[in-house]
Amino acid sequence: MNRVMMPMMALAVLFCGVTTGAPEALAQKTKPNFVVIFIDDMGYGDIEPFGSQQNQTPNLTRMAAEGRKLTSFYVASPVCTPSRASLMTGSYPQRVGLEKGSGHIVLFPGDPHGLHPDEITIAETLKKAGYATGCFGKWHLGDQPQFLPTSQGFDTFFGIPYSNDMWPPLRSFQCPDLPLMRDTKVAGLVKDMDDQADLCRQVTEEAIQFIRNNKNQPFFVYLPHVFVHWPRKASPRFMAEGKTAEQAQVEEVDWSVGEVLKTLREEGLASNTLVVFTSDNGPAGSLSAGPLRGKKGSAFEGGHREPTVVWWPGTIPVGTSCDELATAMDLYPTFAGLAGAAMPDDRTIDGKDIAPLLLGAVGAKTPHDRFFYQQGGKLAAVRSGDWKLFLNGELYNLKADLGEKNNVAGANPEVVKRLQIMLKDFVADIKANSRPVGIAPNSRTLVPRPGIEGEEGYLPTLSLQGKKK
Ligand SMILES: [Ca+2]
View (cartoon, rainbow, N blue to C red):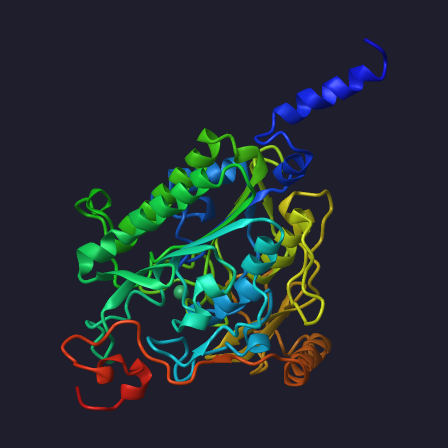
């Protein structure tokens, strides 16, 4: 054997270790998989790694021990629809016209509004880079055909199109039955609380099957759980005596996390998969914001700051924590960077690449010199460094006063002035540079209201407000 042959044989051996034996497959293999587990309405203090003494979350405790906690990770809105719009587009909700729904703070069944089909979502960008993409859980970015996940970059969708409380028992609205969808079709109805209780198990199993089916190519799994949004009931084995529905749901979500990580280990994918666990907004009901002030809907920290854990064995330093400011909008450019995918360059993306923060680069600092909070679908506050200024003039130092108890505006007029300019700049920026919401003419609900015959049964829920049932 001559000297030229030796390296060639070594190369051949290398490529044989890859599924198809082709060099392209080797290149694909190096693209990391991404899994985003996005809980609904879970608070900063609801899981053990973030101090919960009430809920048992051993899988999240292990995930944090094997990964990294992000303790200043924010969503761009304290309610469902705008928060999800930001995750999908890497942009503030106002930027994409989804700071609220057409006639309510979030989208309703048959809503004419939705995420504009011209938006290039994180799923579309990853799909174009060769990723298999799946969405399992609650969408809430529009239920008309052009707004559904399969029209926004996902190869497949299994779950509900909007919140699980938007069903006939919600007495203040005339909602249709709650559809359970597979891709664009209604696959079943969530008829009662036992059906609700089964949703965590179902979406988890669908996500796991998708991972197994796509283990030989890069994949992006978006797992926006229906839990722990009201109305709450968990599977029977989690609804043990003495536990509240909130506790049982948090613990079932923890089970779901454990199942996903176990699957990644079993399939030999753990060292090539980045998993992010977080929530879409602050706590509702008796769920907990821990040390933070405010809850779901609020511009205080409790509404926006989420219990976030990232996990990528062998790449993310184990058992570490990062308090640098990061946001859900950053996941899009960060994933694109790690996947070698190009970001859209014809529009403003507010998110930044936070790979150095996620991967624990020594001395890495936040790329954001400002972050904007929302309340009631409107700009409400800005954070810059440790300072946070509300539109009403209240100023807090988050380093000294995480619970936002002491308004120190009077003692810091220069800081107030500097942050006021940031708030004004944001308003001007959005006014000059925002993109339209998607609008569907003649929108209708996916299934009819119970007992209503003909087209009248499909009228958009919000068009019936104030009308007699
Ligand atoms: Ca929510």
